Length: 554
Image (cartoon, rainbow, N blue to C red; front, side, top):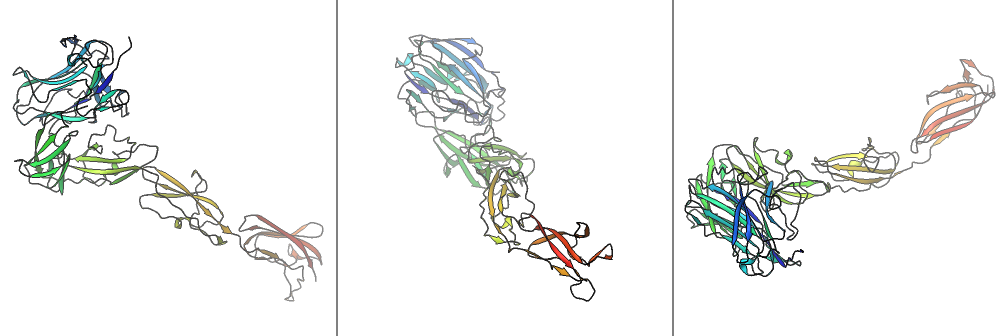
């Protein structure tokens, strides 16, 4: 039978237990990756709205553990993440899209701690098809807290979401789906110390078996005080407190509720006196829970605490940035533990593999519990490198490539002959040849930017090679020797002289050695001889060969 969707309403559930010191509830957060310590029931709903349940096991497809591997997997109807926003490794999907008048329930039984002011903080947002039946026949999602000791249900909150088009805070999309983004609420357990309670999560399809409902939920790993950052060391300059996420408003007060300290989820204070008590009033979105007041004590301890973090981090485009890298918190006290948070102060599931730019936060905590929260701005850009082309110069002037860009202290620079930076340029401070050269700027994390620089070295005036066409080696002091004269930018390599029969009578590689008309120390006869000079053009680096004749006279 084809499923008749009608319109849908989506609600996701996330539970966070806060204010429960030494809570000790095993696997309440599913972090074992299984359903240990949870109980299950399945059943049916009839057309009168009567639900019948029986104990069951975790039937695959009806009770599903979802592992968060850091991938952004979204729900097919609401197009929002299937995993809880608390950074937990595991979440649960309760229910499915199967046809039938089925009911699924999960429950967890616990004892409220013997002392303290306790609250259960949970986020929620359900997928409920809205076929337009009577309310008792509609798909439904409920969250209830049952006081086993006193045999009654808590009145607030008691969530009962019945599919309809007028649920508060819900949105409608073009596919006929009503959905609600994540919100939060609290269950105030004050006065229930030492009492046994049971958390119940239930979904049912419509009673005619043609329209479904399901939910996702998770319990935060952050089991303990609801306000974090409440322990400080005496050498800190101030403290930063953060309340649980997902409420509509936050207002901070002194413990007597007479003085307002601030608003918003984050509160920064000068260093207070130890044992200062403060309160935060959390208000849920309209119609979605109860207003609650959470209390915390600010505890100061003796000890050193230094936490520093880079204000800005530049990642490589196309790569992931690592917020956990040691250089990010270099200079902090040793032995700190770090928690990594999103801009909305929710835990990052994969802080070593961040692919989105934005503001992130690092919370550092030492062994004594002192903590602080600092922001890190992450962007994905190539290292800044703007080069300029030097004006042409005339050989033998050279070009120093290091002067044609503005260096930055946190970048490493190198110089190359090719665009992919595989052929290092050794004489980058004194380039003598025209061409396109390349400068590479690189960050400590390996991000690179390679930019060209065009160098123009103009040729010098032409060189000249001159020699006399006769000489008389008779020791009269006039034209007694033969030599080659070079001017301009040319390097002498060798000179060879031959007689008319082609026999070599003289050779030198010394430009300062003159020919005295002898061969092997013996004077040569009058006649015509031929010389060949070889050298190298200093600018073009070409081989130069010149030759002519010389007449030897007596």
